[in-house]
Structures are given as C-alpha cells and as structure tokens.
Amino acid sequence: MVNALAPEAAEPAVRDSRPEVTAAGRRGRTRRRQTVVAYLFLAPTLLFFAVFLILPLGFALLLSLSRWTGFDLGGIEPVGFDNFAALLADGSTFLTPILTNTLLFALGTVALALAGSVLVATCIDRLRFQGLWRTLYFLPIVTTVVAVGNVWKYMYEPGGLVNGVLNAVGLGSVAFLQDPDTALPSVVVVQAWASVGSAILILTAGLKSIPESYYEAAALDGAGSATVFWRITLPLLRPSLLFVCVTQFLTGLQSFALIIVMTRGGPGDATNVAALEMYRQAFSYGNWGIASAAAFVLFVVVLAVTLAQLWIYRRRGEDA
Image (cartoon, rainbow, N blue to C red; front, side, top):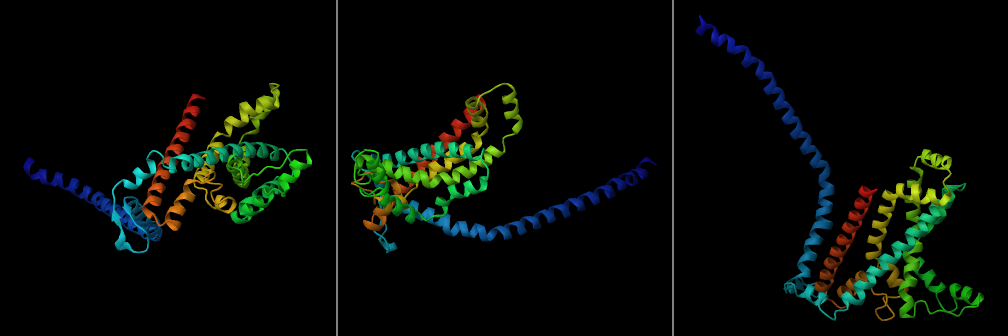
C-alpha cells in the first residue's frame, strides 16, 4: 500500500513545479526581448561613438607610435616610442615652456574664474532681478571665441582701452601681448573673464540649494557675514565648486582658439600651449606622430589632475 501511494504522493509536487518553471521561462524570454530592444535603441548612439570616438582614438594611438606626414596611409612608418621619447627628452620645448605654459594657463584661469564667480554669485544672490544679472554675465559664453579674442586684442593695444585707462591714472602703457612676461597673464585674464558666466550659473544654483534654516540659525547665534560665508556658504557649496574647478581646469588645459586668435603662441613660445603645439605639428609641419603623442601626454596630465582634484575633494569632505 505504501508503494502504491508513493507515486501519487509525488505527482502533486511535479505538477506544482511546472507552473513555476513556465513562469521563470517566460520571465527569461521577456528579459531577453527587453535587452534586445534596449540595444536596438542604443545602437545609433553606440555606432556614433564607435565611428567618431573609438576609431579616431585607435588611429591616434597608432599614429603616436608611427611616423606619418599625412594623406597617404601607406606612408605610415612604425617607430615605437620614439615620438614620446622626443617629446620628453631633455631640452625638448614640449616640456618647457609648452607644457608649463599649459598648466600655468589652466591654473590661472581656474583661480581667477573661481574667485570671480564666487564673489559675483554671492552678490547676485542678494540682489533683485537675478535672472537679468545672470544673463548679462552669461553673454560672453554665447559670444564666439574669435570675437572675444579680437575685441580684447584691440583693447590690449598700446592705443587701446586698457592702456588708455592706465595713462589716465598716471601709469605708463604696457605691451600686454608683445612682452613675453605679460602675454600669458593677459590671455589668462581674458579666458577667465569669458568663462565666469557659466561658473556663475552653477554657483547660483548651488546657493539656492542651501537651506535658509542654516542662515537663520547663524543669525540667532550672532554670526557675522564673514563667518557665515566661510562656515556655511563655502562648505555647502563644495560640490558646485568642485564641478566648476574640474570643468574650468579641463577647459584651460585644452584651450586653443583664444590663444591662436590673440597671440598665435607668441611672442616666441611665451603663450604656446599643448593644443596649439599639436595643431602646429600636425598641420604646419606634417608631424602627425609627434602631434598624436603630444595628445596622449596631455591626456595623461588631464587625467592625473582630475583624479587629484577628486581625491582632495573627497578627503576634505571626509575630514569635515
């Protein structure tokens, strides 16, 4: 009797498991269909990145290890790491002054733009018609770099507006773009002025996200304006400041158009930067291998600086 009942006792278990297996199979097929549909929607974007990012990146890597004068693909001659060795050799102008100018240009731009945008954003946050003021400060962003560079170039001329103001207050004229000692700082000022608008938009948004309760508590405790700024506003603006700092620094390291409009890298190599040197090596001298190697060296510098900024930000955030 036990043996006769055993198969019957086992049958319900088999019947109960079959719907679960069927449901799991349906879920698996549904998930696979959803995955296929998702990749179909992503296909145009993936194709775009493959054609305009991955393939050029691979070709640039190939050129950085080769010697090529352009146009004829059959003329690509592998040379290993000779291009990198030439860039990083003692006496190479790429390290000094070109890469040095690039870092100084980026650091100067970040310092001026960050300080100016924090000051202006804090003032705008206390004024009426804030949208109007943000629009006015944002206008240089929508103006072409060529127009900005030419206007400031004329303002820096010996008979321009800046020297006119200096002469009016009893100071002598300054050869801003003709003197190697003042050419780079002069272009840095223009780059910082042109990039303040975007930084102001980001920082004003960050200021709006700070709860008013912090300021009300500080007012009840009798904290002054300076204390509130240093103890409340700046610490709570840290995410926005980090974003502005990183983006401005990346923009400064890759700057090219403003410099070629205002100084063309001169006088001498006083304002020559990495992006301009890559352009010259590729299109003026036909050294596409050197230009590609310089691009990868600049990429390593950009990556290292960005990672350092993120590490400093996270460490300070944890210490706070």
